Image (cartoon, rainbow, N blue to C red; front, side, top):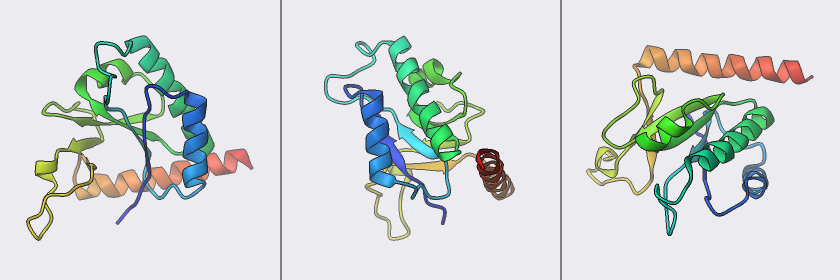
Length: 156
């Protein structure tokens, strides 16, 4: 099983503070997958009071920071509306939650109803699934490893 890490995006927190918190929390233990940033509204934050331009700029800044620090693509897990706002962020891949998924999305967000274990219980964790077959998955993992090596060698 491939393991990854995620960060819950904070609308009320500074980007520098979130970057610092992420690095202090995970260090270099980022696993094998893209780093995931979950972007979902909470509390008083919603699609009516979060400005699209600010959302784009903040997520773009954090994505760029994580991509350059860890040499790994960043997976943005969000809804279709936010995907439309964020889809031009470089080095980002997307897991789209809800009924509509972007056709070119490498990952999809799974609802709790789609996260049933062998014992019939529903998962309590938010999950993302690769949007492709086994051959595409193996190709994807090889490309991640190749990209990691190229970026590491470029920084030596």
